[in-house]
Length: 222
Length: 352
Image (tube, rainbow over all chains, first blue to last red; front, side, top):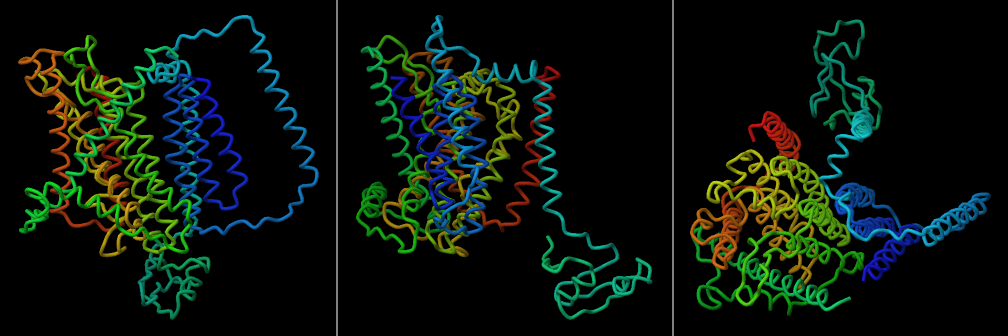
């Protein structure tokens, strides 16, 4: 029974994985990847690790892939046209690496089959949420905290990269419609506190005076 | 495989069939109740022609959905267009199996007590969150594959909204998890049976968590006042604009099943699940009557939540999209973190 389920989910995982690279429509690839994650979660359940399975679905299928699908939908990516690729030396390298991988896997399978002690069949509580939690907060506390700091750094980095637009200097006013700028923007000699307005005619002119990159419309900030 | 396993599997399948039938029946009558209650709120009658008091209206609607012409837009992405309603409905239905409808109950003619929950396992709560998060795809993909601007807008709005409020929803549950110390829903319910069945977590000690959960759950199910993904005045019908006949019915069904499951989760975690005050003192634990009263109490609490949904729909106007996002990220999320902080501190001090 378990073997049957394993074959089902493993086949599903491999099939979806092939789909990820073989599909020409990027959205189909993304959906295949979701299929891979879900079938892997089913395999985790069969390995008596329900916590990992649930987290796999929540984090990968529920959060990360939603963002990927979101981006594909927003960018409206075209279907890829099939064309000859020039990979050069990568092809033999891939063949060699695949051969090494297959050799490793078959070695592991063979050594497991030949090992004298049969694995115990009783279900352990290693995969349960309580044991994982207590282990994470005692034995593996430092790696756990370091990982969370790493994630925090990634968030801060993303925020910084997304907010690259130069800040408008204080004492400057940009009013929608009128393109009214402070005097010291036009003539740098005047001190910052002076906010006598100067009128410009177009958005790009205002952007130029403010020293903003041209593609950013200063009116649409925020 | 021996006979015992086969009997167990068959029993589970029967349990699933019974639970799904009960839930779908209640869902069908929720639709009718919504139309009647909205009619009452707006000073009109609502559907009352089919059967006594409109009792057979859901079945008439179902027949209509089945018999209507199924129109598929010419420029749609076919496969995903068909897949989207299936994903939505499946994700909605799959969470039903973990909710405890009642305690283990002695049934006449059977020796062992019958569990009134289909699947009881360690990470039930995480399973609910995981399956719910997969449900986003149905809506997003439906919006994209219809090849319609309104649909796409609805789908994008919906995914943004569901991702944003999933955070607040998940964090609001953590208070309960901290207090209960388990993710097993049946165990969480049993922990709330103190004080003659009144030891609900909403009283002691998650009132804030309950409010955050309720608000974000309404946003998760795309209901008024958070129904921007299908705002009729702006987007025709949002992500399901291009869907007709049975495929539209699947989306419709999924929305109401989601309402039902979200209400079941609220009942289980905050309102004591199947705990009916003083039922244990009167009937005694494990008896058949106790099980019956508990199951009825559970369904009554869930139906109360469904009524709240309808009530809100008849009362509140819709949010603007930026208000929705600001509310979710800048108000609900910090509030949920505050709730976790308070709960953790109280547990650390030994008060809870």
